[in-house]
Amino acid sequence: MQQASTAVPAGPGAATTVRQPELLLTDYHFDVPLDHKAPGGELIRLYAREVVAAGTSGTERDRLPWLLYLQGGPGCAADRPVGRSGWLDRALDEYRVLLLDQRGTGRSTPANRQTLPLRGGPAEQAEYLSHFRADAIVRDCELIRRQLIGDRPWTVLGQSFGGFCAVNYLSQAPEGLDAVLIAGGLPAVDRGTDVDAVYRTAYPRMERKTLAHYARYPQDAETVRALVRHLADHEEVLTDGTRLTVPALQQLGFLLGTGDGSHRLHYLLEDAFVPTADGPRLADAFREQVAAVLSRAASPLFSLLLESIYAQDGRATDWAAERVRAEFPAFDAGKAVAEDRPVLLTGETVHPWMLDTHAALRPLRGTAELLAARTGWGPLYDTERLARNTVPVAAVIYHDDLYVDTGHSLATARAIRGLRTWVTDEFEHDGIRAGGRRVLDRLLRLVRDERG
Image (tube, rainbow, N blue to C red; front, side, top):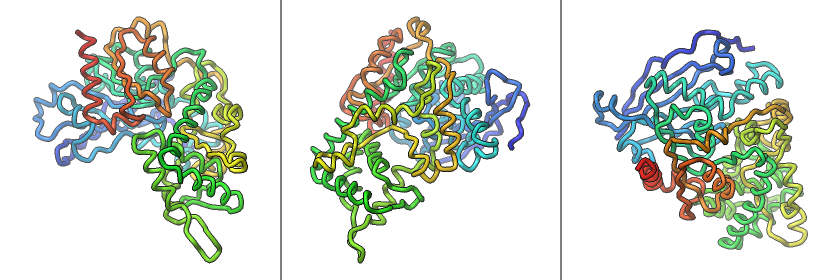
């Protein structure tokens, strides 16, 4: 079992700087408490990468304000830039950017099926991961900010779950913020909107997105029905060892939340079958591509912690997406095929059966079950403080976002004093990437308008 460190939190580790075309990249390492309520206890190491435009002199670099980027997820590492493009291109016009691997991701003391056994058994692993929610991530950010720039505030850009973290930041430590930019990540802050309510709004969106896809590509409806019939009679294992069951197949709807996702799904489905001596079977190329979509190897925390990001009422999440799905019988794929109806696809949901089907999650079954049963999740947002907010905040809300409910986002926008919104149907949930420079520029203009 891994031994705890009790050293005092360290400043940024020795920085390593490398050059890319158009970019200057500097690595930092920070030691922070695993449990911020016990700062003298065990430490974990965080990694962050500073990015500035190539050609920036040392003096110019020191004068630039900081922009902290918080990645979507949970459980996803920060972007790995190659050259100057997209939103980063716009940010580098006036900021030095810090790309943080949030705790447990990327190079920040990673938490996965290979490393978690170092903690002990499932109970020890679940207790460890209970410290990996947005409130702990924000406390990490505050320690990093003070070590880098002292008392000066910085700007935070939060994508998706990164936006959830940014709203927690506004609740917990607004003094550290010069401005907040949120892209598709305004969470429900009302404690009455529990995790069950989140999924009751999610399944109708999944149905709309699926039917819109079939309207664009009618042949895909029959292909998916054929896949459901095939999987009912054949055991299929993907190239990463994941078993492709019918519910796992339905999770390909995850693609429908991005701007090009419907087209990517169509190209994937059009090559699903190949003729063999034993009759039609799933093509190797199809199995490989499906594995890439469904794999949790690179981000197991997404499955382990997703439902906990909505928990702030003290109750167990208890596999909310699975329970709520029972309220939507239209998602029964077998019945849909029997009745010659379109098979509905699902999106950003986790289910207990994934602990058997998904290769990267099987060793973490006990840990996942304990996290789903965990009670006592504390509040993540201070609605009274948000109502008194004085930090300039701008958020882009995508009109029919598959992953974050638009109605919940609008309610939160009204609950945060001074928040300015841009509601658009031009982009899907990945708008900060698809729209890149233009989306970030619009958010920056909104916060500057708020400043007056």
